[in-house]
Image (cartoon, rainbow, N blue to C red; front, side, top):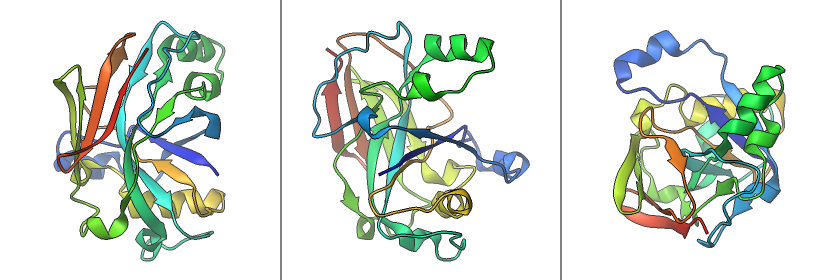
Length: 204
């Protein structure tokens, strides 16, 4: 099972999308050991003092595909969840000093908490899904998939030109353009899709 992430994929206004759509997507991968499910609490990672959160919708791949066409791409999604793509900002900065990769900054244990899934049938329009994140009861991020630079189909088609997608693979599809920030120990995170609370955990 692969965890695939896409970076810098949301805008504040749909009018911005065309200028930013260069055809080259920012793609990275995360190990399976980053996953935390079942709303389990997460020990604050010892590897960082700058734990940055980004709320994202997560698409689960339901069937095997390679070189998937744009027209068929949505049919490869079986379910959707909401998750947090964590980045250790200080680890990332140290790596960038030597032109190093994102792997350790994105790949530490607990870096991908994720809710349970909702069947794709619950989402008649993948380009109009609302989701949000509250921390300690305060709204921090609000997103709608109409503001994605590359939509679900475009991500799947692009990624599948490089790697075969297989059932169970997860794609973190990007975070809203505003509201990402840092967590501290003790923070309580709650993320919802269309107003339904699905992800609910604390950093302990």
